[in-house]
Structures are given as C-alpha cells and as structure tokens.
Image (tube, rainbow, N blue to C red; front, side):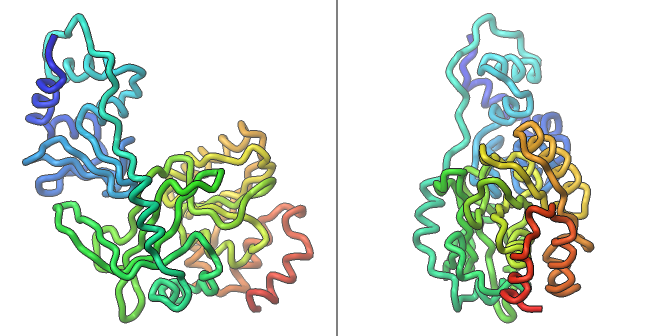
Length: 340
C-alpha cells in the first residue's frame, strides 16, 4: 500500500493540474492558484501555492488551511478518507490500492482561539478611526454594539506571504448561543477614513459556517444579510428587528437559524450572488418552518441606498417590505430615534 505522504508528494508536483481540475473557477496569479473558497466559488479569498510548498492552501476569509487532499475531499463530497485516496490515485493515474487508510485527512485548522484573543485585544469603538469610517458610510452610533471593536495595529498577510499592519474595524462572529467562533477585520487608513489599500481589505478568521456578526438576540423574527455595512444599515432603519451579517453570499446561504424563528427577512444584494443566496436561504427557511421575505434595495445594496438616497427614503423602502406584524407603531419611534 502506498503511503499517504507519497500521494501528497505526487499531487504537489502536479499542483497546477489539481487546481485546474478540482477548482476550475479559479485562475493563476503568479505562483498561486486563486479562487473564492474551498467549494470552488469564483473569487480571490483562497489561494493555493504552486511552487515552494506546492499544494498548501489558505483561505484568507476564514483562516482555514490545508493541502490538496483536503481540496479533493471537499470538492468530491467524500464520506471517507478511502474515497479521497481512491480519487487522488485516479487523478494521478496510479493503480488503485486494495487497502486504503481509514484515518481522516488533515482537517483545516481551527483559528477560533486566535480570533478570540484578537477581539479581546480590541478597544471600544467610540471615537476611533473605525467609528469615523462607519460614520463616513452613513452609519452613526455604532459604538453601542458590543460586536464591534477597534484595533490600532492589526496584522495580516498578503497572498504572496508579505506581512502588513493597519488599524482595523473588528466584528465578532458568533454562533446561535453567543459563543465567539471567529472575527471579521476591515483594515483602514486615513485621511479620509477609508479601507486600506489592500487587494482584500476585508477578511474573516475562524469558523464562519452557520455563524455571523449578530446585533441583538433573535427569537421569532430576524434580518439576515451578507455584508456588515448592509446589515448595519438595516439595524439603523429597522432597529427593533434583530439582525445578523453572514459576511459573504456563500455563508449567508449556510446560516444557521434559531429554532424559534417564524419570519426571516433576507437582505439580498442586487446581483447574481445575492439572488442565489436568496434562493438557497429562503428554501432553508421554509424547511425550518419560517416564512422567508426578501428585503431588496433600490441600488446595489442597502448601504448604497442609505448613502446615496438618504435615511428617510431607505427606511421607507425597508418598511414597505415588512409584514404588518413587524412594522408596528414602533416604526414611528424609529424615525424620531434615527432622524427624519
């Protein structure tokens, strides 16, 4: 029986071909294969080394990393390590072994502890560059949210391995029980307050699947959206409804829902990814026993509406898409709370 190490070495020597076969939506960028995620979505978050430590990959959006066997296992939806080895041997045109190891493949690393320590090292949001950045996006009084903090010098690493540091807005990613499972970072610069000049100024670290950045605990009703600024916009115009930001369209479709949920408002972006997320999550809500409703902005996303069309227009549009049960007299107090 061949050793696992031998198979890994053979795959690494053919790293480009592995990526082209199992992650066809990606593209080559120098000595890396770049793709959206481990599922092979289009994007730039996950990068696979094609030279040096060939075959090693890192998902900068989640902090996960692994090797080419992980990619083959995930894209093939295998139920055993033996299936993965058999597929790898098929790809390498090796005679199939009669016996396959039963030990699990190396699991992507869990960075929850790192995320927790980073969030704990952050500062309260009020009066910081992160607070000013959010205000520049039309989002004021965000310092009242415990899920948001600020870091003066937050380190990261680019796809080519170079280390960098910028101030950052930190957002806690939590599960349904409120346990911190990850952290979302938006690196910033000034003047004026804006995202740092990076290829990917927003990244997440830790366990994202099923989880999100939460604003108030949800019971019977919840707003779920993709981007942090989209969801913060909706907490500004519909402050009485709990909300969660899943941070990507893929993770929005994978969001875990509370057992008590009756109505789910899905704040979709006006693009193809937003349409797919709406279809997937709305079907999941129905299976869960909750009624799904779309919250659709006039422009590309709800924060664009807030910045370009104004608070009153954005709130009126959001209110018009709510069920009567969720748009009570509280709505009038929201106007006075948030301004005309």
